Figure 1: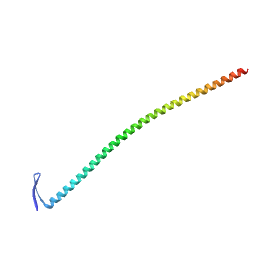
Figure 2: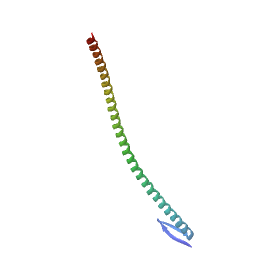
Figure 3: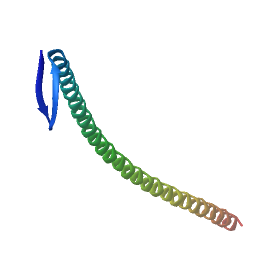
Figure 4: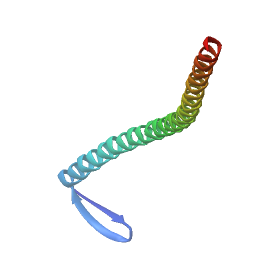
Length: 112
């Protein structure tokens, strides 16, 4: 069986087998298009999820950096306090040595 037809201004003659083959090819291409669309939608969903993960991780990094700055400031304050405590201890030792020297002098003076 031969069918006559016109497609985009071109006169065609197709056998029934050719029409069936064309229909199968069209169905196959349609199925492939649906699969490709689903894969594209899945890739888009994955990209959205990745964007959310990136935003969350960026926020976490910012929090970590802020905490790191706070800890650095705490460390510097503690180092300053330690230096002040060392100076105070050194001064206390000097004052104690001076008091001991004065006490020895007074004891010697009183004994003489």
